[in-house]
Length: 133
Image (cartoon, rainbow, N blue to C red; front, side, top):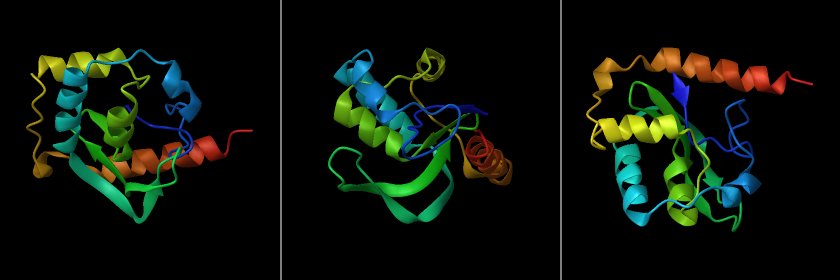
């Protein structure tokens, strides 16, 4: 699995970036943001927690704490919120190239995803990060 869109303050894993770095990132065009957000919204929910996350700037509730996938990439549900809000997001360009190669169409179906494996891997990443000095 590959990970994209994780923010340390919400999801403390190695691949996550600190929230303050978002404003230092290259601004994306509104058309590209719209295409990415549509793609993200077609992801398969892997799992979620019984809590709502709050915007790191305004403290307004933004979405449930959950994680989605397209079978290759995994992203947090809050990814689309911050992407739309800031027009900036420091993520791997490999993700953009990947979804462009699919013409921004996410055709994944629920039965083709091993949700338990993704959940176990992400749980391991959370624990691994917490155990670091």
